[in-house]
Length: 72
Image 1 (cartoon, rainbow, N blue to C red):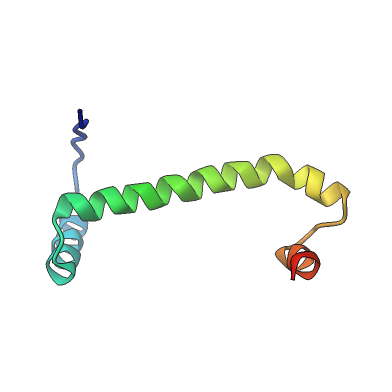
Image 2: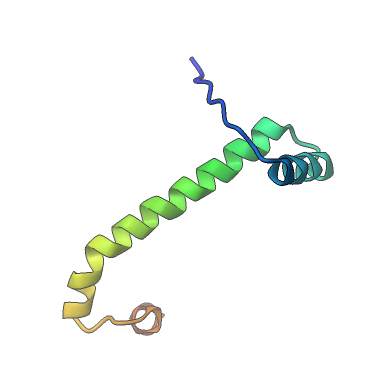
């Protein structure tokens, strides 16, 4: 069973959503679900990154470039 989420949009956001929906040929719900899915993935990634950062730093990985050097 699908859940329903009701949100309030200000006028600017509603116009932007309508425009993107029209240009993409997708429903407003599809656009909103995709945006929410992406935002949640970013949030989870950021949380994971915060948890592992101390371990990485202890091993000398201070930047993304440090990681890329070892895996490239």
